[in-house]
Image 1 (cartoon, rainbow, N blue to C red):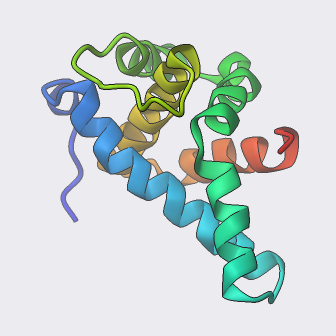
Image 2: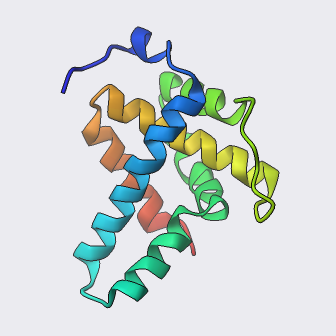
Length: 131
């Protein structure tokens, strides 16, 4: 994989970064669930859905916000303020925008290959966000 510098990552729209970050974040959730407990797939799926829905991700933003670097916080804000993102009827618009912000941050961390930081933030979310 090619490392993309911060300047180049800024060329991507926040929604493009969120598109990637959504997959990255869900993979981290699924991996953690599998490593945490050997349970039926239906239970794994239900647990994963709870942790990737907008309401949970919105709470996760509150957990990591004080820990973010200036660049990370800027990326989070870019995701939150992204326009053109259609909010599903089943979601609260504020929570959905904050979830998009989180996904944008995870997309940014993936493209800059800042995996250690990604896992550090994910661990904070995993252990400090209530379902």
